[in-house]
Image 1: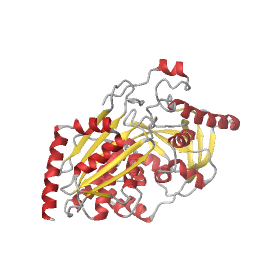
Image 2 (image 1 turned 45 degrees about the vertical axis):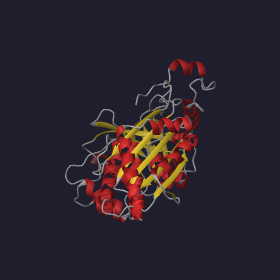
Image 3 (image 1 turned 90 degrees about the horizontal axis):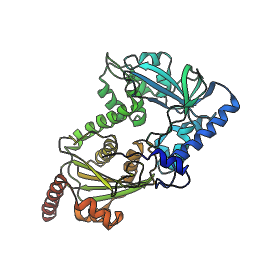
Image 4 (image 1 turned 135 degrees about the vertical axis):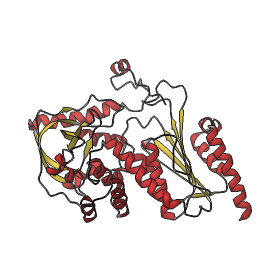
Length: 420
């Protein structure tokens, strides 16, 4: 897929009011408004020292690898319970608008620590790692070398971030709240992947596992920091592959099952069909978005996974949807052939991370499925929601792989219903 940026000339002429880019809201204006509120707050305090609760919230960047930046973030809240909402995807889903999420993330003030990925002990010695994996917000004191500024130029393609500067010091005031199951694993001599599986089986929240892995707290002798974006996809893949090994031995589902949901300008449809496990992911990107501005028609992307769990290519959004599907199949003790369709509309005017894909699919699968008699019935339901023109574009111009898959499933369903 080719990403096309909105030109600076259009932004200058538009000034966020004329909507010349075609988006419903100006992603730059939403973020600037939130940042300006924080700037006014900082100007009144006129200080480079900040006191507050990290939600916890920390991001390890990729730029300059292996010398990377860790952002330790504190929201402008002095209340522990309110601070938690600044980094809580499970609570956000279905309750917080895209504008609200952007506003909250843009208000955060971050202290930047430069660290080599091969020296995670530097963060552990100061309890910074422990604060960022705490189950509750942690009271922190942060002194910055300079007055906070925009961390990067505001760009509609980047996840929202607020103000920050290099940290002179970060002091953890509270004792981080670490569960016994996490504390035990941190002291075990285990491979990182094995530790991840144990944490998951012990019921540790997946977002906490991502942070534990990213902060280099797992592994035997050679521990290292992992950039946050890489860690998120790695954890999804490790847990998914563990679940898949169990699911392969389960019986097939009995009916064709259909689910759907929508959130943040994204719509999702999930079809599960009796058969061996396979996973097929289709994304529909509308032409009038920040990513596809110059496209004349929707862009359709496919990623398919075979029985062995090997996908066409690695993709974070694909992995986020996949883990929620596999969790559902493991919960009901069944296997199935799965198709997930994601439609990205112009209402999704700024990226906020793959968590919304993971949580959207998970929440869709909490509802009771619509039971159907065939795969084509399910595809017809999706086409009806998409509209005739877009539906035909998605399903009549299928790749050869998708057409083979569809024909195979229809044959299996015919055989299945003849026997039953």
